Each structure stands twice: as structure tokens, then as C-alpha cells.
Length: 549
Image 1: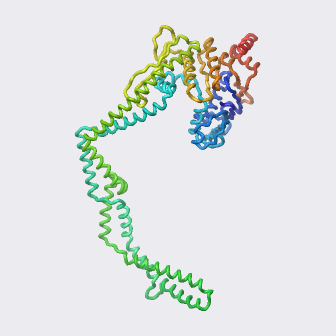
Image 2 (image 1 turned 90 degrees about the vertical axis):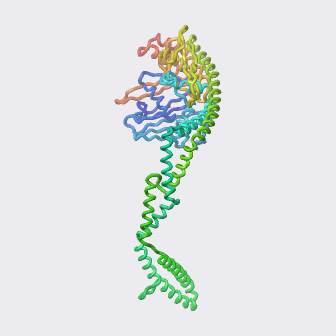
Image 3 (image 1 turned 180 degrees about the vertical axis):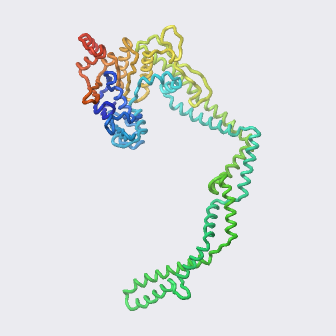
């Protein structure tokens, strides 16, 4: 559960420490006091998007720090190299230059990695969730989540992927005769052109290296001749090899008279042998150097052929030869396309049969789950003072798709005697709030998230319905930590922990504070919610009755 939240320099909150308890926590305050800022701060430590304009004017960065207790040892910790601690600390810093620094138990993580942990810690349900309930594109996902269909979906997905792959292969081979002949002629021309060149792997690199040598042959010859003369000597000079031989001979004589010259003699002898070896290599290189204008011309001609092929088929000889293999394979497939098509169609039939079997298993499971989901939602709605509502999951059968062979839409009738219609066409604002709460409560039973946040989901609800919503949230809070931003006194009165968000001005700046309320504080805040700015003895008495109620 979320036990502590520290906010610093986010919007009008300069600094705030908020402690949350188990059970039912509510946040109340005047409109614009900063309740949504608290939710934004929690969203930030869950890895949701954070904007630079969140940073308080005049400061360089904003930061949020959250402490979660009784955190299970999710695989996320090991997968991301983060030390596990049942008391997990998440910190995020947001800078004006757009940089974000996120840490979990002291380890740096990216925002996207943090988000994967965040969705396992907290679910935030806001007014925007109404749009997802209206959108029938999401209804199948809601049903699958309730039915725990992940394994069935994965099994079907693998089988459908095989079907889609075979269909693509068949489409690629299915062409009219004219197109087939044109493609075959093109491939035959390309194959003949490449085969005629009789390329060898690496040939282009070897030819370019030889051409470079031939283009500089005269310089190479002169340089080698000069090196040979320096090493062996000429008519008027002694070469390095000869001079070292003389030095070695002289030192050999001296070493006979004194052992102190042995080391010096050995070093010079080693140099002499090395230079003699080098001299022989240089001389052999000079003698082996041969070139002619005809060879250079032949190389240029050959490279020109290769260059023309490069422009069409690849950067290197290896690329061109790889294209040749690919072209031969494609030509073979086209020439024997009818046989290949028959084989593929046989495979497709088997793959489609397997996919349909998985789709029908999925459909059967969905229909069973749909009945249970409808019953559970109706039960929840009855507890939320909507006993006459009818709710059903309507199925429409489809061909195979990525999600199965079903389309699902939620239908309801809000009043007795009315026909079932799509959810978006019959629900009022207050009814939708209760339907969403009922669905979220039912779906929340299927996950392990320990904290649920409801951000003004009570919009449009009042009177007896508001009392029912409050009781439902209180019952949910028996098993999960619940945080609720509300304007309803019925909800605030049933809270285990009541936090007041208040805004003040000092020295021309706006500040927001978060204060836990005791009994008297709660009574005054409930009186404000009931009667507005004018707090009277009557509203105070009503507030006290609600708290003691």
C-alpha cells in the first residue's frame, strides 16, 4: 500500500508530506485547491508522463518520493536488477530541460521501466475511464480480463499468427499470368547477367587492392631499389647489412679478450641477422614486383563489370551472389507456384482449423465469463441503488481476427420496461459513475494491485445513490487500500482517513497544504461541503450526525 507521499515544487505545492493509511482514505477541498495535483504527483511516481509545466514557477526541478509497504516480491525487481524490499521507495525528479531521474530503492531506472512497476502497485480510476466504457473496442478486453483469458488468448494468438503468415505467402504467390511472365523474364535476365560475370566472393576487394598496387608500381619499384641499396650497399657505399657484419666481426674478436664484450657482441649479432633477413625480404619483393599496362587495363575492365552489377544488385560481390541465390529461389517458386500453392493451401487449411478450434474454445470461455460478469455487475449495481438495471454482454460472431472470432459490446437498460441498448446511449452521468465503479470493483478482484485511486468518479451522483457509492467504496477498502478525491459528504463521512487540501496566499505566491483532519476538523469540512462557505450550527450538526452515523 502507499504509506507516504512527499511532494516538492509541483505546481502550487511547495512542499507536502502526506501519510495514507490502510482502508478508506478521502481527499477533499475547495475546487482548485490542488487535489488533482496530488493525483498527478502519484501518477508521476507510477511512471506516467510528467510535463515541465508541472514544476513550480521559479524552481529548477520538481520531485516526488513515495514509500510503499507490504510490496510483494514481483519478478520486476529481479528482471531489472533492483534490490527487493517490502518497503519500496520510489523517487522521481523532473527538470526544466525535460530530463527525468527515476530511482527505485536507490537504483536508477527509466520512466518506461518504472511504469511497468507502477501498474502493479496502483490503479487510478478517473472520469476519463467513462470514455473507455463507452468505447466498444475496449469491451472485449474488459471481458477477457475478468475471464483470466490470457493463456487462451496467447494460444489463439500463436495459431492465428501461423494463419496470417500462410495467407501472406499465398498472396505473394497469387498473381495473374501476365504478371507472372513479366516477373519470370526479369528474374531470368538478372540471373543470366550475374552468372555471366562469374563472380568470386571477395574478388572486388582483391582487384581494387591489385589496381592500387599497379597504379603506384613505379614508385614501389624505386622505393624497393633504394631500400635494397641501403641494406646491401652500392658501388661507392657499404650497406647496413655489410656494416653490421663488420661490427659483429670486430666485437667477436674483442670478446676473446674479455667476457665484458659478450653481451654487446650478442646484441650486434642479433641486429645483423635481423637486418640480413630484412634485406633478403626487400630484395625478393623487388625481384617479384612485376606489372604491365595490359594487366592494369584488364583489371579496370573487370572492375567496370562488377561496378555495373553493384549498382543493380548489391554493394559487394557477396551481396550480388546473395541476390543471385534469392532470384533463383524466387524463379523456382514462380515456375512451380501451382504445386507450392497447393501445399500452402493444405497447410493453411490445417492452420485455420487449429485457429478456429482455439477461437471457439475462447468464445465458449468468454460466454461463460460474460454470464458471470453480468451477474456480478448487476449484484454490484443493486448495492449501488440501481436494482432495476439490466446488463448484458452481447456477442457478434466474426471471421478470424487478431483477438479471436468475437466482437463484444456491453448493453444495458437503466429503467424497467426499456429495451437493452448500447451502454453509451442509455446511461446518464450518475448512472455511468456507478456502472464504472461496479465494473472496476468486479475487475479489481482479479488483480493483485493493492491500492485503488478514485479521482472524482462520483460526479453526477447525489442523495441516496451517493450513500450507496460511499458504502461500496468502504466495502472495497476492507480488502484494498482506497484513495478517493471527492466532493460528496456521504463519501467523506465514511472514510477511515480524511485529508484536507487547502490553498493559501503569502507574499503574492500561492501555496497548497495537505492536512490530516481529526474529528472536529472533519466535522467542519463536512459542514463546508454540505452548506458551502457559510458554516452554521445546522450544517455542523448534520456533519456530526453523518460522522457518528
